[in-house]
Length: 228
Image 1 (cartoon, rainbow, N blue to C red):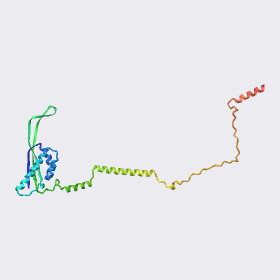
Image 2: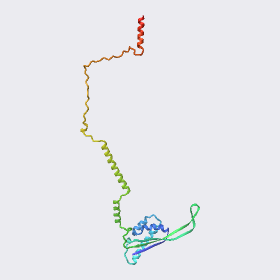
Image 3: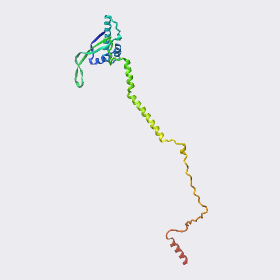
Image 4: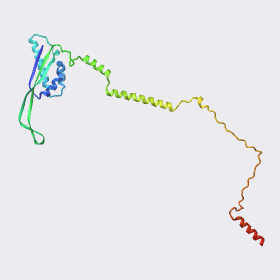
């Protein structure tokens, strides 16, 4: 069973409204309403009103056809936005360098179609369990750049610590007790014989004048004494 609702002449451009419609296409009604409630876009309110109108149309159509339909089973089968008329004002708005632009107002038309049939299995409508399993498998295979940086830093620190420990071991070798037992050199003493004769050493007396010309002076003094 399908139901459709449309909102005409919604203020805003069709391009901006399509950004909101793309968020809810293919989702269930509850997911779509929750998404639109927290979407910070001006077109979110008109789209939400259109979705609620489509839900009411689906309930009324099911009652007329005497069919039991649970609103929670409805999902958005189609959602698109058409371009509406553009209103041109005679007044102008200011522009740079003294110019003026004509003011234009855009409108759009929003159409949403709901369905109670089974949702096709596509990439957009994958079960939450399958998505969680895929996400966990992807995390187990690949790690984030921050985790890789942390692992590399840890491995670098461990390697540096190992190298430093090896350097300390090389600089300070272990000394065994046997290596310290080195023979001490023996002191050699020479004996001086006591019976050897002592040779007197002559020291020059301080009375003898050793300056040059001293012999001539002494000879002259002796000659003077003999003459007397």
